[in-house]
Length: 262
Image (cartoon, rainbow, N blue to C red; front, side, top):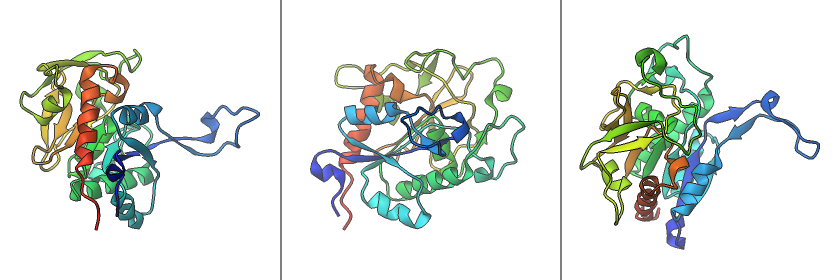
């Protein structure tokens, strides 16, 4: 079976776990009736397209359909969104836990595990990084302001602006992916920050390769894989910078190398 890369541009599936209820929708006279909707920022899709791939939003599907979906994809981007249901990692809910979507959580985690088992390239962003960690058997800090009260992990500035630095492990796959032919990424990088939860227990086979000044994990990777990287910041809104643009290009190039399914 041919994949997207065999037609010149890899096909990248983008998961979405955020839902908008009808009462939150502003309806115009010309629009469709209000229904429960899935929500995904166009910034993910534009960043992937600009890097040379074809993005495809992956809707929630029955578990038995995930294999057929992945047969057609060259890479997976696990996107941001709401808090993860703590039941997915065997924890009781914290009183400050935000709204969750358990059905979408189960689908996204199944996609992550199946793609991981096939060694399909994965780029995880913000909540997606947390989902990747849970898919590998890790757990989460459910209410980060309680764990780190003196450091703000949710900025008020727009997503195309940064709010704090991170320290990147030299020689990591992340450091290589953030660099390009002209610029080698520094040990520190300014990033944006919009997360309520964070990695607690690290998933199997994963390594933390960037941290915020308060020690909160900002990136994870599996160094045995060509490309399995999760970043806690919203890299898709910073692709006007060379670093994040390079991250998406390296992801797309890794996706070109996925072999066709027999």
